[in-house]
Length: 325
Image 1 (cartoon, rainbow, N blue to C red):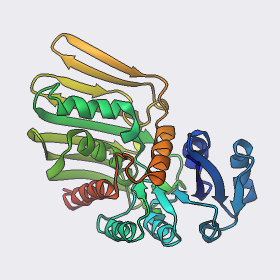
Image 2 (tube, rainbow, N blue to C red):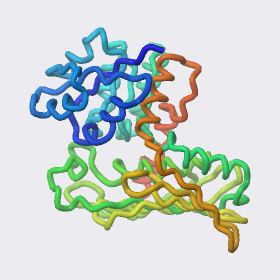
Image 3 (spheres, rainbow, N blue to C red):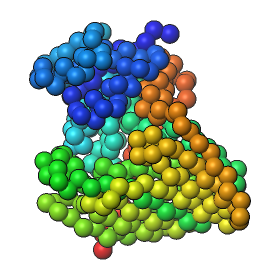
């Protein structure tokens, strides 16, 4: 299979540290082009991808006939606009999360995907990690009995970085758009569940949420369960997800930034017995890029996260904001 030529719109620090490097290393993919008007920003990308073509605008990259697909690591408020432009330019699309700022904004992308026959999805990398595939399977198979409670936490502290796009309302900042997509979407994915009723306590600074505690109920294959989530950009770093069932418990100690926050572990607990599954060498961004390339080349290739899945998480975010108390 010829590698898929992928271009990246924007020289973001996140792309430089994680996703562009994954593109460069993944099988079946070629990190072929970058769009940035700054040679200084392009230079560190060219250091590990010396054959990289650099375009001075996003439109110029989209006009490049050699580029088959684009990856969008843009600020949140630009995702829908440039995903639409990329599809209209005939490119397959992988866009960072959250894909939109409201659920109804995703509908146009779904329609455009279907009309063009191109592949478009959200870069929800955790579903490619085998720890989440394992947790989903264990819940499906009744390893912990009927699911009764899910508890999710994701926090870090960027209070000193005032100019960060996550701290700015005009770029779609806030802990809920940035990391709520993980705490909410992971529960939806693993438990095959959707929210029933939610309420939220939210603290804001400069027009963005910096702390949010969401509680309520969700419903999955084994019925309703209670749900709790804390996201914050003002707390000491912490990541953890726990699924409590009638006969056991599953706990993930590095559920979201596996290998960066700490090593990924899945703890399966039954009474005094605890089994631990370790994933020391898995690189979820690389797995994501490889799965994306396979799906671009073969529309029958499995891919675990669709635009409809992304819309579901955004609908949950919309519900959370509507349920603020």
